[in-house]
View 1: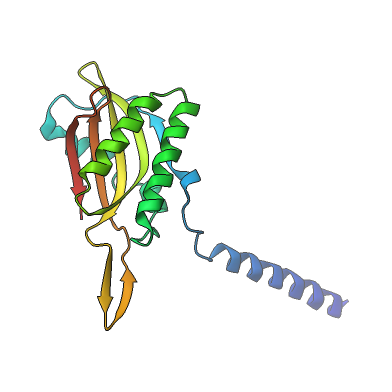
View 2 (view 1 turned 120 degrees about the vertical axis):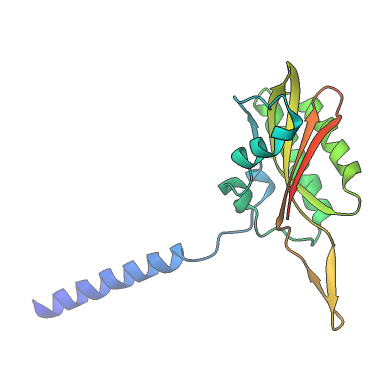
Length: 178
């Protein structure tokens, strides 16, 4: 009876350790399937000086933003394109204004000024009775760093939210955090 208990204890211990090891493995890198397109119930504040507080309360440092922590400057243009297309497709599937979102994505690409910017979330809301898209991105200044002849890709560790008028694509505000 004692040897059976030792065997059962060993089997249970091995199973527990295996499950703990699986639980401690790093998450798989985020993919375009995980971007988020949502219609918000909360409207954007009237005053532009309140945009930052709204964005921080709803998006900065939230789990969805953290999910994309492994994105880097490596192939960022292709990643940005795939994520943009996925956001627009999500909008179509959810009955949101995908056409205006697509125009807003183009506006952001033209605004990047050489920065590596990857959109990870698009949020449809309103401001003063007008449609608005808030597009949340991860970004970095440089594309890579060379040290002692070796090139290193940088993590897209910064937060940026673009607030755009849905019908015109006009950028109403940019909230950026380092």
